[in-house]
Image (cartoon, one colour):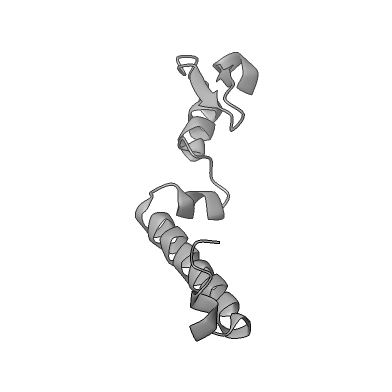
Length: 88
C-alpha cells in the first residue's frame, strides 16, 4: 500500500467513511450539473419522447405521410430505424 503511513495519522474508522462520503457528494454534484444542462431531461421526466414525440404524434393525426424515418441509438450500441409505417 503506497500511503500506508496515512493511517497512522488518520484513523481508518474516520478516514474511510470521509473518503466515501466525499466521493458520493462529488458524484451527486457532477450528475446534478450534467442533468441541469441537458435539454431532453425535463421532457423525459414529463413522459415526452426525446425527439419531439408530440410533434410526430400531431403529424400522424393529421395524416401527413411525409414523416422522415428516424434512427434511434440503443445503449448497447445498436441502432433501429423507425419509419412512418411503424407508427401507423
